[in-house]
Image (cartoon, rainbow, N blue to C red; front, side, top):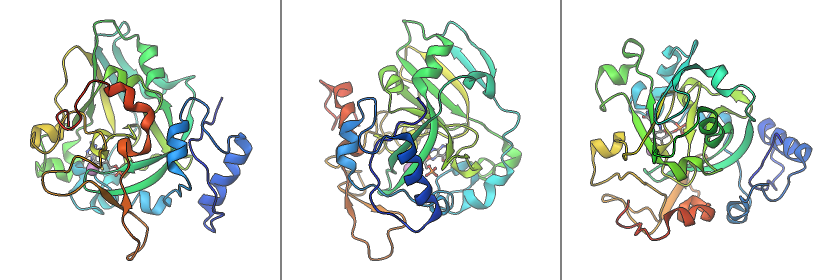
Length: 299
Ligand SMILES: Nc1nc2c(c(=O)[nH]1)N[C@H]1C(S)=C(S)[C@@H](COP(=O)(O)O)O[C@H]1N2
Ligand SMILES: [Mo]
């Protein structure tokens, strides 16, 4: 099945992209709830309006291309995305250097309209196209000893101004616990609005974990490692007090330097009221993953 929408769209917007979305949703016959237990997110989402492609591709965090919000849009054309291969290693049955097309061949591309909440307290709504990470992990054969998945972003120093300036310790690395990685909400995105990812969005393939702060959604991935140890993550390495491994969106646990109770929706206009931030960013179906954990400790 090709399309699994996770929300309803009610406002017939004048922008072509929104009109397109409505049409696709009707074609897919999935107005209303998602098909695979994503109903909690759907219920909480209400009348979710996607951001425009222009908004999504001009306000970015991709520090390899600079720290300003418009820097990636200006600089990421220098990223070389073809050919692209991903090294899969660690505790897997089928390790190797996979050409991207081979790794994804035959896997179903899903359409997922997700909230996206940056730890800096801004947010968007993004219509991703992507493949469930679980499908990819099943293909490479996760061994039973594996407990975590580690990810690494490409480094092309000559093309990346932020790498030249060492604004972070590169390569950018991220990680998930295996149960988080296998959750059906977790996708490897290859497109937005049915167009291949723009470079500034993490072309050709990036992680999207919609219940976690945006920095977990690592871009332009070249390596996936299955491991039995919690992997290092870039922002935790940079400032462990402010950024933990879990980084679940949580309005009740403030960042040491600002409140996480509300967020500013990009594109809302100058006078739009801030919105309440939702627990797990409005995806309560992931709560069982953290049963028995204190989420004010496991930040
Ligand atoms: N490689 C890499 N991945 C990254 C980042 C980065 O700087 N480098 N920034 C993260 C942060 S902080 C956020 S909020 C999201 C932003 O994704 P977007 O620009 O597509 O909205 O990407 C995440 N992935
Ligand atoms: Mo972020």
